[in-house]
Image (cartoon, rainbow, N blue to C red; front, side):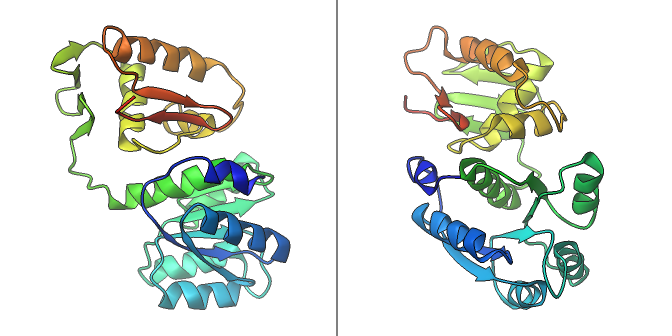
Length: 239
């Protein structure tokens, strides 16, 4: 994990984040890394303290360790949900089996990241959760620069020129446009576009991104789909 990696990537918006983590070294690292990325972070070292802060504070996103003293992470999340707290939650855990993830999500978590992790991915996931919380479900048209995607008509245009995409390419572009200006990792694409929760080394991402890039950039002056080395991809207008 490297806080420097995160600071080299530009993110939009500042968030107020609650970290519920009993490992002091890990908590200090996350607090420092989020701060360097331009966000405000508060730390709780156990489940009871975390629940109290979350219940009384106004946070944009919570990062919750699953195994906590005094009150475990899943219990904290379930209790908050029962009280109507809808703050997005990213669960951190060393338990990475499919059943463990399912249990975490069913307890009220919005995303699940297995330890050890790269901070660049954790930050990207937190940014996505925050962005998703503010996106209206009624939104049907996404725009990034001169690129436009219409979910209802299932059409894509750039500078007024129609671009024909295959269903998977359309879904990939829709996800990237929903998170335009943010780094999207390979794992995030596998889980949200392909519904895979394994094998992040598969080249299916590279193949489809390459095909999509060819269709939305060929014949146009400026690139719009960027590869962020060591992190993932970013859809960003302006070259």
